[in-house]
Length: 375
Image (cartoon, rainbow, N blue to C red; front, side):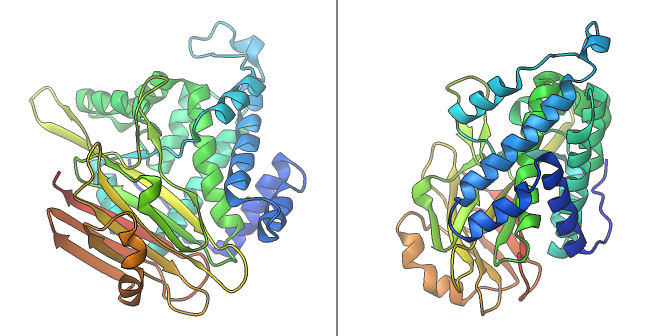
């Protein structure tokens, strides 16, 4: 596979995203934007409402033509759409990691933040088309993921995908195996959550917000508790959250690498990326904050990631190790004052770099790549 994107006018992309949402539910894009800007609706609730609307549409389209596919081996319907929505509301909202083939992860890590915006727009268009697909099949779902350059969109799918990739050396077969593992309808639900976050970014692109991607090239699963998230201004609307199998299974924020072995005993690797989105609240304040990652089931070592999109000052990012909890606010001013468009860190067993696309301009995109994380 490959990471695909075309240069585009992001204001045009914003208009297209708005039109897509309004087509799902008349006037929804305008209402979500107005209600969040005026404080009538929290940004978290706006994202959930948008995700539910996308998922309703995707599953309703999936149900169409069911009679003709009643004997098809991949037909899972008819799906009780409202039961799926009730189930989503009763469980912790996911923001799943996406799994990338090793060479695609390296390509993703090499994108500048402007190119990341073009890539996000390509994913938006690709996932919107899948949502609109009537009677989607395993093949249709796999085609969308292949177009987006993604091996899988959840841990359960990723486990099957990496095994198939090692066995067959075929990225497409790996994607198909992942979709089969969780089913088309579950895939559509996961894509719905991912798409909601992307669309929210485009709908609010005129505001002082921040969209971030964390690509983990290490083998260490990383978590971030609520106490290890600090917002100096704005709200953290969306944060990576990937669930393991089972009703009471553990959750992981940023997964470490997926590993399998081919017939010759060679390593076959793939890497996970998670996304976060921070939005300004009211007045002349932007979106600025910091969060601290730690290995799963451990409190350290820590990697603190600072992102800053202030209203009248330059955007920037920064990295530091071994600060967490209340220390994030204590260290905020000195680390914010040293923010840059690109920073690197290599200490305490952690090697990482962070970038942001531009010093000024609305809704910057940040990319953090973790190269090494000894735990």
